[in-house]
Every structure is written in structure tokens, then in C-alpha cells.
Image 1 (cartoon, one colour):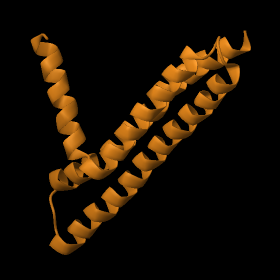
Image 2 (cartoon, helix red, strand yellow; image 1 turned 90 degrees about the vertical axis):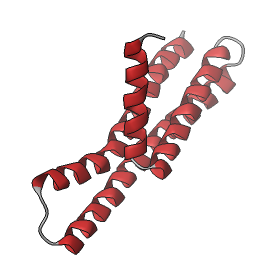
Image 3 (cartoon, one colour; image 1 turned 45 degrees about the horizontal axis):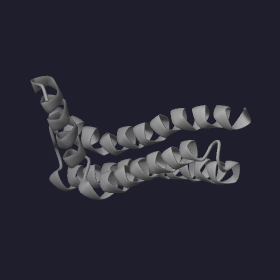
Image 4 (cartoon, helix red, strand yellow; image 1 turned 135 degrees about the vertical axis):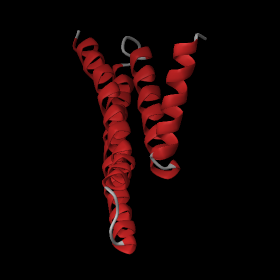
Amino acid sequence: MNLLSIFTLNVFADRFREGGPFFMSLILICLLLAIAFLVLGFLNVKKNQNKSKKMLGLASDTSILGLVFGLLGSIIGMIQAFDAIEAMGDISNSMMAGGLKVALLTTVFGSITFILPRIGIIVLKALQKE
């Protein structure tokens, strides 16, 4: 591994921790499941069309679930940030920006969990129609 890829992995790991382990882990599980369902769908596209279509539906459902977990994590994160602001009273702009950044990390990861499998879903649908 070169230095750039190690740096990139560290940045992703830091962002993952900043987003909160509970929701980020749920979203990661959804991403991994969606990818696994897509792989199974691609493997069965010629052998078993029914199984391939079932895997396509499961990949779609788990990617949407990851997106919803991301949005829910952001909403809960913002509520927690505003609770902290309310408790502290007057805060600086940088503290506010930091709290909002953390709250939005789950939305970003949830969106990635939705978009990446969606590309595979489009390709798999095209292969199933042939």
C-alpha cells in the first residue's frame, strides 16, 4: 500500500468514528449486505432468473434501508447537538459547525450506501432483460 491509500483509509476511519459507531455500523452492514445481494444476483443472472430477481430486490431494499438509517442518524445527531447548545447557552460558530458536520456524516455515508448499490442494480436489471 502506498502512502496515499493509507492516508485515505485513515480519513475514512476517522469520519466513520466521528459519525457515531451505532448508526455508522448499521449503515455499513446495509452496504455490505446490498453488495453481497448484488454479487449473488450477478452470479445467478444466467442460471436462475428468479433468484437473481430476488437478490435484486433485496439489494434495493437494503440500500434504501442504509439511506434511511443515515437520515435518522442525522436527525438524532442534530437533536443532540441542539440539546448541547441549549445546555451551554452561548457557543462559538466553530463549535456549531463541528456539531453539524458530525450530524451530517451519517447522511453522507447513507447516501453512498444508496448510490453505489444503485449502480449495480441498474446493470443487473439490464442483464436480466437480455
